[in-house]
Length: 494
Image (cartoon, rainbow, N blue to C red; front, side, top):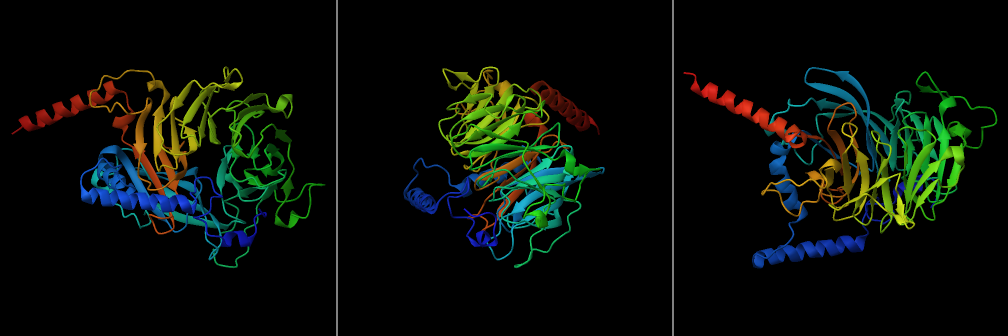
């Protein structure tokens, strides 16, 4: 595949099997036939059929006032493959204003863009239950307003913000390079056909083939890692290119090359080889800038330590039964690593005991998805909680602490997977990305590639489950008792 060139943008973005999480045409046709057959059988008589996507969505929407403290639905003109929270800008009585980064994958009629938006995040226990359920699927949310547009050279597959300064973001496109943007300093652009690309502030070089998805920023130092089709993991430092929170604009001596007109380039600090197929995701250790991990289509999870060389520190063969799509390292406990795979499972590994007889030995397998898992992420607020999203259109929230604990509730379905305590079913197609909000506990932004259900675009949702769902049971019961006694005392007054 060519490096990010304009002709790539002219391909239809929804149909080809190129993208992880996008279904090829034959499968879509099969599904349509199955849905038609299912609808026909329902008319003929009551038979035990799986509910359709629309039926599931209708059922979910009716439960929104009960399940959520707040929910904003934002219909996108174009599909999006990545969404991330940026810095909090302003705090007010009932809501906070925060940056939001997302991508728009156009079809060639207009250029691909990186969008910087302002989001009004409603505070807990402020939104009225009836209001949050009354959204129009085809409309833009009043809570999300576009602030700035960057015309991206190629489609945006992945966005990651720099923890030391979240105004600086990295993006992956269909090329070997990683692009670094100072989003506040970048000029706002008008996305019209034929417009020139925005110029990246830095270009990170070192991959020998396209690097599309695997991208991470270090929590402790301004380091970046990436993985790609060349089966390698590449590490960069951008320390020398950041001053006062902005990117230094000039080339350093000896670093200029034929891409200098596009922005200064930075060579790798290290290239790490050990995978036998495409590297799909990478993550830094929360406690060390020299340690990181990667997963790939070779079904391997590899731990790396830059202090001891560029070969794997630990290689976990057959970490899953299929390609691995995603990985995340627990920021509260650096022994715990999550992986998600095309085998529909999420697996939890302890770095102190990763393998048994050379094969991956997870401490638990979470089996709640019915299709390939595309994204996993630990909660920033509670060490045992994480989310996983998949091609089945669901975003599951899990609590590892609940695994193995018997809960004597006759109402609880026996088929509910252990550890699963919330299921966000507001998307009607594959949930390609999500991000916990570190500034607003339990608030999540998620995006789906709803190319069929919303007329070609995507759906961005910002939501916070009701705190009655995740708070300790004794707290909730105590609050209900208080409420009950308040109602009784009010009823007793003349």
